[in-house]
Length: 367
Ligand code: GDP
Image (cartoon, rainbow, N blue to C red):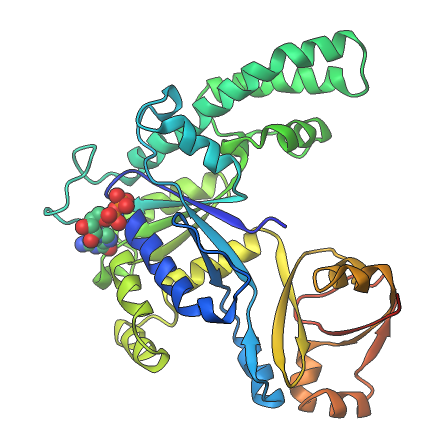
């Protein structure tokens, strides 16, 4: 399941600081998730979800298990990466594996921290990285064109459309535009092509604008510019102060909340980014509630009940009979499963039921 977010950005913009905060959070949570392996450039973290705490207040379980999301540190992307500068090509290949890009952009002034390009200019920075993504895509697409031409000549099904689209897309990229801005990106030919090529510039992007602590509340001019830029391609902008995030993960919850309150913000930027990433990947959660654990399970939006059950165990899908479902709101309003059942809020759903975010599920199966 697609759950991987690649962190990119120019040097000295706050990527490592952001990634360190994620790693610290992951390490602090690791004891709860023995199945998560730890790799140096990856951090698997909990997706914050207050609903789990509300459920736990009712059920009183031994443990709470969150949905998880993986962040991959793709350090070292610099100007010229697509031509192999630095370890460029290797890093670009790493991005290809991810499902979403978190692009950290420097939006803070600090004369003690040098900027590789001379001064703070977020749009220039964004365009440097985006151009590398585009150039890498052009290379990929060029490699593919010969084969597409052969397939079209042999009259393979859909090949002619694919070839035409690839040629048109190539022109678009050569104009310096991202594949995510391409007009025909919803067409079948594009989707087929992209499934294979996993174009870097077609990926959804969250611009993580890194600001200083005292600029978290109101947008500074840099942030305003990034918002305007991102709006053109429908990408999200999330504000964070990377330095503060590192401090926050070291604090207990009450302390962190007090700190955020003083700054006038309700949630840490990183928590918001993690939640948004999850949503952007088109993922939702359903819950299982028992005295042992209250747990969040990750599925793609649109999964039917048997497929959703398979993320717990394949047998649940194979032997699926029915799903007992209580919606989150009903569960909370009634004060638990037994009372929800009494109130007629427990539904018995079949194999065509499309699971809704927040459903509390219990599967009946037989293998
Ligand atoms: P990377 O090269 O993008 O990984 O950048 P780093 O995370 O190593 O950050 C570069 C420098 O900027 C470090 O000295 C950080 O402490 C500093 N830095 C990161 N975020 C902030 C911030 O929000 N404000 C300020 N003033 N400095 C920051």
